[in-house]
Image 1 (cartoon, rainbow, N blue to C red):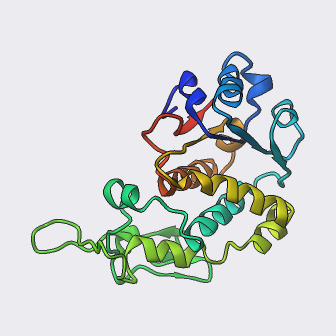
Image 2 (cartoon, rainbow, N blue to C red; image 1 turned 45 degrees about the vertical axis):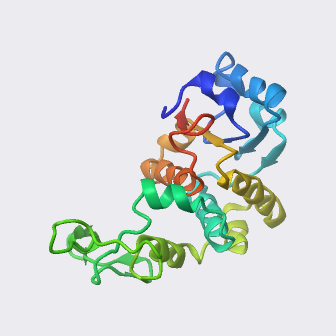
Length: 233
């Protein structure tokens, strides 16, 4: 966990995906109850099953098993498209302003450097541009089309609410309700914590699911603050 159980009481939004904390971690779930009772926190549960966690959630959304990346991708697109990003945070604590090499590309689902024969990637083209001083080139204005911000925006533009509904089976209006609740924590005065478990980790793309969750949290400025974090149960 990037934070600890007790810190969950400081959250304004609690998102549970890939886990069922109320049933599997009843003592730890106490802190979600504390957040709801004393911090007016809202609990969101996204799960293929209507679990015991879902039964006490403010918002529950169904999702097809294994489609969490598409759901999270939709959230990332929503945050970027609606400018619900904590700019000061991402510019100071992430690679948002870093400029990526010209050779980097993503075409029809394949990244640059793919070797079809070996079915593997040469990732050298995915690196950042480095200046004569040996440091990564940056663009604080975020105007350069090769900076991480703009590449991220372009990549996730395909993850529309309609695409999320089609892939995940989550009703569009329910997805948009959750995305709006999550986006409310893009300000320095509000925080969301994400709680996940084996429903994320035990997939062939489990690491990518967790990385997507971390990207959401970084865009919102919810890593390294009270009530934030990526919390494995």
